Amino acid sequence: MTVASRVILVVEDEPQIRRVLRTLLELEQFRVIEAENAARGLIEAATHKPDLAIIDLGLPDRDGLAVIKGIRAWSPMPIIVLSARSDELGKVTALEAGADDYVTKPFGPREFIARMQVALRRAARAGVPEAMLHIGAWRIDLQARLARNASGELLHLTPIEFRLLEVLAQHVGLVVTHRTLLLQVWGPGRAEQTQYLRVYMKQLRAKLEPDPSRPRWLLTETGVGYRLAQPE
Image (cartoon, rainbow, N blue to C red; front, side, top):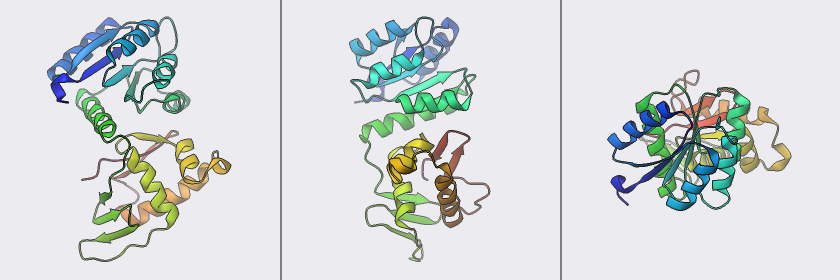
């Protein structure tokens, strides 16, 4: 499928924001379908089956979470929330309802398009993580569970550290919530114990980041989760 044929659904009640998004997306050769409320958004999603949906949370008839959950009942299409709500709980709730990413208004056009492209690439890979990650000087083979630098020097990573990287790699470039990481790495018994994540992320940064106090790849989304930056 070419970029020009990709269809983007915009569910947004503010006409000005819809106009801005339409102009931005059409410049990138996307085809745009608009919906001004939740009910219309669900109809357009089912009718057009877009490649990606952009959903505002503050819709006039129902909360945007209802649209996310409605789409997730039948489709794995990428969903990006675009909302004026900046509270951490709102972000976590949207991501755990099924959104792939969360962008706060006002937004930078270039960053927004970059996040869309990340979500579309991930969908094209159907959730299969990269077999090889390049993080700084290290080349990490997730399948073989080996990490080496260009000189062939081995880096010791624990099984938990490899699993954490694997889950982040499945969502590379996107936010993964604390709860999702805890469930997928440690299981339901640790789902609320975010101190496990803090400890292991600190260890991973100490091993992988040139300057762990200013990480370039293992990024924190404050109060929400972590993001593996698109590897270079």
